[in-house]
Amino acid sequence: ELRNRAKYQKYFCEEIFYKQFEQTNTKIQYIDNKNINSPFSDFTIEKILPNIYWIASYRPRSHTDTIDFHAAIWQLKNDSIVLLDTLINAKNKHIPNFFYDKTTHTLYYSVCDNNTHCSIYSAKFNNGNFTDIMRLPETINAPNSNNTQPCLATINNTQYLFFTSNRKGGKGGYDIWYSVKDSNDYSMAINIGNTINSIGNEVTPFYSENDSALFFSSDWYENYGGYDIFFS
Image (cartoon, rainbow, N blue to C red; front, side, top):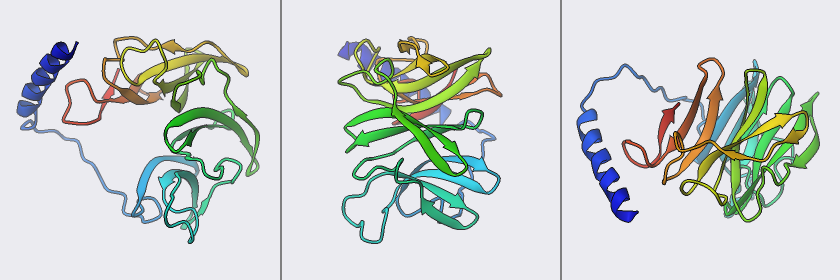
């Protein structure tokens, strides 16, 4: 297996060497807003209302929080940014990523113990308040594994919860899995398969309903180093 891995990585390096000279029309623009891009690590951002954004960030939660930072979800409204409800941002827990379903007003988010063990939770959001906070069942949160980076998508009138996990039965390290959601029930998670999952790590799934495509990051396929973005 190690020999095959080295063979593929050598091939990827050779292919990328030539691709770096190709011209593309892609433009990346930096968001010059200190409330969004802070001096710390900033992750997920999602527009909730026309003037409200939620941001997952690894910034201090208070002026006295100067040593042991914990990732949390923040709310940016106009030019003011505040910590989201403490029911979501539990003390001494990392909340590194989330997905908000505007149709059902449901927040899906990860709760991690020092980034070593993560579980996926959900909560209803109505009139500025969070209710019905629950840890998703073991069909999603498999024991003795990390389960994180949820994304809910509707495909052909069926709801699928995509997420990342390093549970047993995967193709590599972290794989992308999905569960069919029916009301408040979640089917047993299914590995999305080796068309996407490799012997490396596949993470951060996001399904674009406009493009009918699943976007994800991988450290295995032909890439420019580390984790690159792919779609299928």
